[in-house]
Length: 345
Image 1: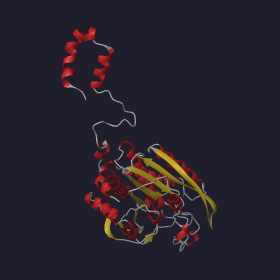
Image 2: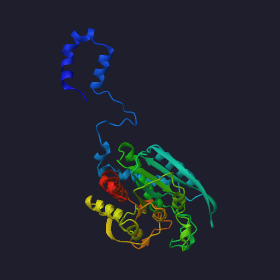
Image 3: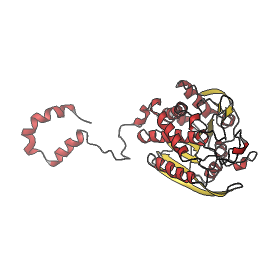
Image 4: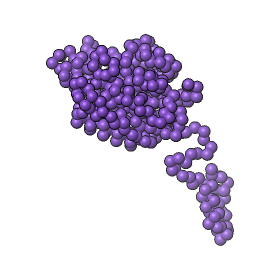
């Protein structure tokens, strides 16, 4: 801290005192007038909370998030085993490493009936690694190898671009990561991007959510999370996110927190009504004891067409506004709900 009286008197007294001043005295003065270290890890001595609590919902840049969405689709469909998949993996890892405290990959292989043996990679980015109170935010980054819901049967073997189903959730999390770099929250945050979520076949639940199943079977040592939020299909231009039913069953308190936060922020895309019952990456997380909800708009439609698992799942069916709605709620939640963290089992 800087004593104002000393700062005012020093110029008048310095000519008389200079001969007697020692190097030690000058060093003490420099310390009193505010010299400090900006090195990471030098915690302020009189602050109980980080400055990040001053963040506002407007700090989420929806346009930048949309550019993240487009950049992923520019690689092409991120089908495991493809060149686009490899290029996107490098891109996502690089982006997260530029913002997170630490990033690591989980590499594994599976055999898929249609694709054969494929190499998959989960990506985990950590913020505030020393914090014992942690929130995990997840999304899948792969895209479906087959557009088996396309209205044109001739396109059923074509890959899905995955703008909404895949890239949208990742785009929100990449932008949150960019924001957390400059404004770290009180709680620790883990961002996990799952691979191989969309390689499943209809009627066979075991073939879906490959990345989250691998992640939960190979958790970091002593991994403890307060709760998780999974994002899937959150970029639809006509976004409307109801309460996914499995999420309400697994973690009703977290669902209430999310929807009350959205209401407080006047984010109308969160519709507080019962929605679909969806098998998604939050299911393996809950089965592993990590209380996790799923934010998903399964009604991916424009007029009469549903773009889910079709070749028309492209960026022009998505919007920055929708990404901003989800990102705003999550960013506010991560920073502002410390009282909930204290009481969460």
